[in-house]
Length: 487
Image 1 (cartoon, rainbow, N blue to C red):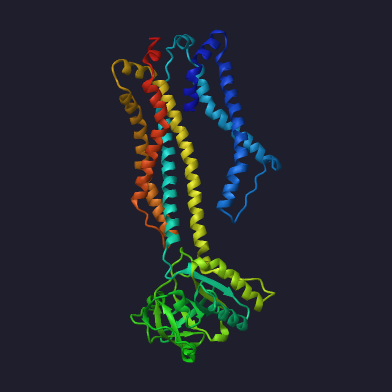
Image 2: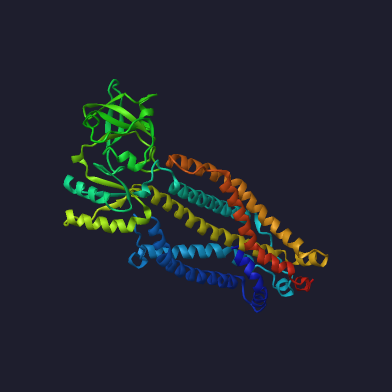
């Protein structure tokens, strides 16, 4: 609306001539409304093209669990809705400018004395709201980007990127692959387990001398599994290799289980598991074996007998990963030729968390870009209208000796004040909302600090300066004679 009014200043002479030649106000309104509706038709066509070629593919990539289809020609209701939306927006956005411009006096227009009235508080309030929402989404994009980087770099308690996992279908196949892997260069250490860590289900664990039950994850592993993963002990010892006593009676627990049980020293305590009593011989430091948006749960490591191992976990040098995969595949085909090669990296366990944080980041980034475009267009329109309204005032100031810098500062001050108001109102709301969102959805997340919001305000102010800078510069260096020649 602002832009339509501002753009009409270049057509004042046309409007005056039409009115002198007999055009009625109704005819001028029809002309402006028709032009606006025609522009709306072009905008609708462009929107359909962008939706099909850009927005839908982008959205489907962001939320890859759901693919959207868009074909308006298969749904007549959608066609009617889009046409009604286009007509409604065209009429609403063009009605006021058409009524306003058609009411100009032809004498004042032809003499160059026509003035544009003030822009009003409603339009300025709307601009503040637009920039406030943009600040909200930009701040969200910054914080979610920081959070995605935080989760990617988060210490999980061991080095999953150095671990490669093979899943055998029998004890014989496991033993063959384990022996073959130990002979391969680039393999630092091998270990076995009944399942891949982070893939098993919960199991009830009961303190032997207490009826209170607690749920814990149970991992059945070989004696060298803790060493292969690089887990750190806080109390006690590791399993003894080939120890039937440890296999029958001993377990390791993490710090979360110790805290849940309320123990100070866990070594020597007993836990009942599957109707059998086990002694805690060691406590490992907490490690994240599932998703980052859930708290580290209690877990138990139980020593497997050699015949029970099916999953081979290898600690490798990253530089040898591709070559090792080819060698392991060749060994796999020797012992399981009819079974598809089943290899994965241990950090695949965390792919859900990585993908989730990436999707949230991308969604907020794209929304921020869209809101920035909308708010920038609104600012551009308001600047255009303000400059059109103050053309003669600026000319008088230049005649009286005002410098281009002084005039630019005068014009910039008003818009920067509106953007600052948007920041003062909306950025604290964004801080509270984002902090609450992260605290409720993520157990482990980047701290939500004021730095991101200060950066947002700086970015928005710079964007505003760029948006209005060229228009202000042109009017500031223009010849005042052009603005005052009709006075």
